[in-house]
Amino acid sequence: MMTTSLDPVLVFIIFVALTFDFLNGFHDAANSIATVVSTRVLSPQKAVLWAAFFNFVAAFVLGTHVAKTIGSGIPAESAFVTAFVVGAGSSFVAAGIAVLITPRVRVSPAVA
Image 1 (cartoon, rainbow, N blue to C red):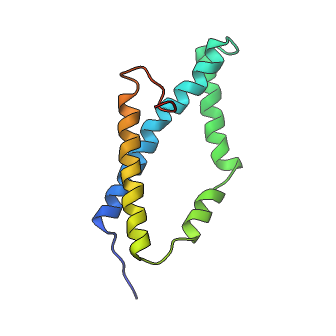
Image 2 (spheres, one colour; image 1 turned 180 degrees about the vertical axis):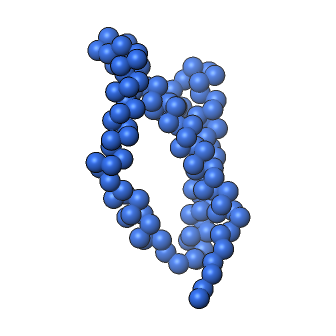
């Protein structure tokens, strides 16, 4: 039986990616809710309930096709994979910093 251990750098990259995804969700949720509230299509309470309901339902209706595709095509360890992990990690760190800074200077992360 073969056992594998995760490289500490890879674990750190996964942690940073999940943290970025969580923080970026605040921006996405606020933007989607702000649109329907500012146009007075829905009240703030109804907009939050609407968004929560459809985010929850989408996970079950649309499935996990993207995650399965990404998970099935992981190549063997090589210089390319190492460079990719370092590049992806750097990108997530930079994007996370942007997500944390942009609200303080009142700029959308999509514009920054």
